[in-house]
Length: 256
Length: 239
Image 1 (cartoon, each protein chain N blue to C red):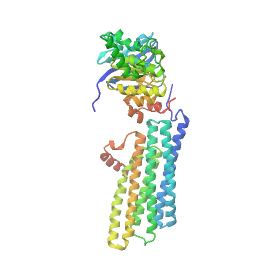
Image 2: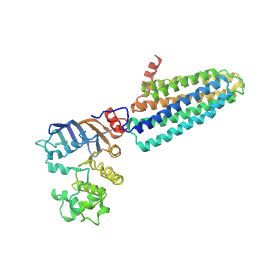
Image 3: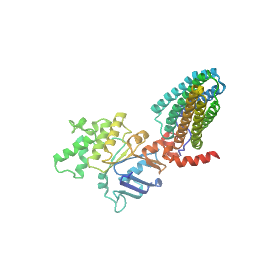
Image 4: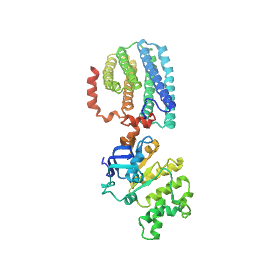
């Protein structure tokens, strides 16, 4: 079986928050077009790692990141690193709590294409917005009220709006930080269905506290514990026969 | 700092898994008794015992039914993963094998009733000997299963060849017996079927050995180049 090419790589990635070492040197490859799930108990460093991938930690006072991260072989960090604005266009992110801008549905989705000047004319921008909303499974629900506030949508719709906003700039990688933890099971299923549809076209890295969600949506699962990557494997292997005792203890609920 | 324990954080999950384990232990013990009872009935020409064995088969069926229900419940309500998942799946399959074993034992008991209407035939001794060997393997594999001992299970699996060899020689013995005295053909044919029952029980015991290996290691045995492994193990088992 041929391994898919690598979209992103991380080598010896360490993160300090002040004096605290939050990540103790992570080596992890993110294969192209696959869904990689990061699981582990609170404080294990999985979200910290996710935030390294598009340099979100840069904005946190006292955070220091070392090690090498690449995107298509180009350095993400360091003096030769990709410009963060460009990086975040290529590596989008969806957060735990839906956070639409206090703007219209249309303007939320058009925001990225506008600041990155990704459209030729109004018709083209309309197309981009429609395509993004359609791919996020929201178009039918909002097409007649595009100029209403995004914040007026239901929680699940808001999260799909955030996903539409993320994909409107045609990112290559989508990071998701517990994207369903504030959603009900139906809204969760819709987001998971989107992740399924997206795999192949996008490379996805998802942090989740729901083991069943990791099992349902990902092809590969990485288990973090106390700032270290304990085990990485095919999701089916991790959930049927994990190699590491810590992984087994965590996913079966024998931890603590 | 979190540590891993032997116990689930949710205690009722542990209790349900223990209930499943205990049910399989009970079913295994009952199945062993059924087989050894059927062999006693054959050896002693004891029709009362044979009848009891036939009637008691339903008790093994009840155990299987309980395990099936418990398994479905656990899968639905607990969504087990990793070794918990393997325990649940392996128990379900082991219970299926035990149910078949008990059926074969009941079938042997039923044929013994017919045999008791006829004069004793010679190959019966070899047949019972083969039955005792298989019952020993069954006890051994159940022990391995219940204590999660993959090595012990592999040793049982490698000994199934002994059963197959005994079956072949018994087959020839019965055939010779029938050719020498055609009046024994009816009895001989029943013996043949019983021998086949016992040989099949050996195969089911082997299945349970393979389930044990899966349960403990998370790997299937057949991805392990069985031929070479078997020969190595046979050497080890003879020691």
